[in-house]
Length: 301
Image (cartoon, rainbow, N blue to C red; front, side, top):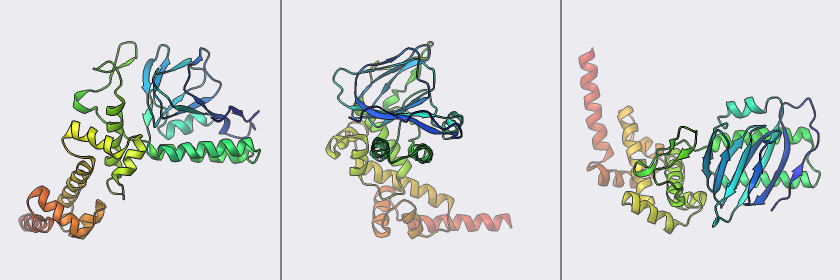
């Protein structure tokens, strides 16, 4: 655990500054008067509930971020069987709110980010530099700004719950679920699917996704098979092929190689898998699309 570190009084000329940083074992956190600055929480490995009186209650799982605004009463209660670590970064300054808002990070609920371990390591590096007195306020201001941008870039888009199990908002603002409790396995699967949709063009392996959501490849495959009746690799491959097919529809004069590169696949493997999935090679489909486009052009002229 990284003990609480406070930077001291900020320089009034800094529009954005680091107020504090640290980590703690998951334990009850009760702040009836809130905190003097924006507080960014990162959950690593554990799970618990955040409650903001009058605003709502949310389950926060591993790999998620939650930002609480200054002066807002809040409480965090970890689940009894949850063993994890909660990181926190206090962010102050006259421009803190506008920067966080423009970056799309001020959501009234926890949200997952990809590459969580990278963000976590940057936070710990910041703590060590601060602990050793190697970082001045001006430098930490730049580091905090960069960290906000990194989190914004890593933010995973919201996705609909699997099997129709969507979160809903009660009249008192409390988030509820149809099964009344959070399912860590389902939450991890939702994050895995979101990562695939975000990074299907990249050199992304199922192992990378499993690491990002905190599961083994075998366990993640079991989740995919249970909910989608395919392995995680098959789901990702079908997603890439579907995206390639959609791309070819929009670019009828493109080459097969361009289509393969668009979804991060080797061209020969792409042709073989495309035929297996759709019953024809992408080249044959492109020939048909080109013919249709030519007929359309002739009709227009």
